[in-house]
Image (cartoon, rainbow, N blue to C red):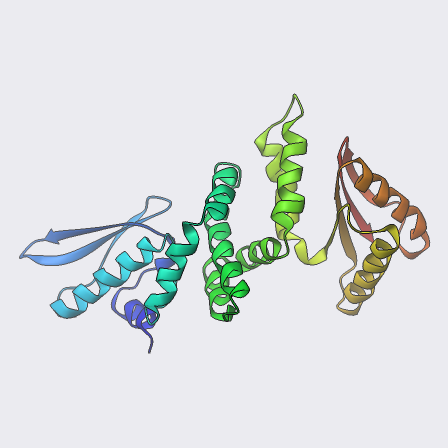
Length: 266
């Protein structure tokens, strides 16, 4: 049994949403732990009648470690991993990315992005990242996994940031409108092709046709295309004409000056 499993056996709480930890005393000098969640719900954990003081101290230390790690849930079996996370988190390039997206991503996505920065850093160093990605999946589900994959593939720099900049230049810009488009990207990344300036029309067509074939194999009957910038918008429009016989017509198009999202069915 690893230390987090043991923690769960002592305190029946979901440590994935911890925000703050307060140590207090409740009657007869019995130590308890107050756990504050992101949604401000509060519960009391640890029954002083079932665990000894050594176990209480261990739980307190574990929970503080999780909080010190800024939300990245890792097993305490590797102190070096925690130290690596803190070191990676302080890198100026990572701080710049987090600073840029602060207040511009919904919900807990900034926390997931922070974990993504660390995971990519570990991958670049040649370290195994499977357990880290599993931790993110366990904590944030499919959304967490998608964001890690999007960041690792460079899409925060080539798709999401340019999309935000393109939209925010409009006079009627609203962060809510950006959230709606961002949500499509995050939740449907498995069924999407992101068009960038480096991909040629031929490469784009080959990628789309390959993804259509793969999706059909697994019973998926749609694919989303995303493009930012006039050149990429034109590239997608040309693609639609070239594959018209391969898809159901007409496609669903959400387009404004400078960006386009297309859903094709087949």
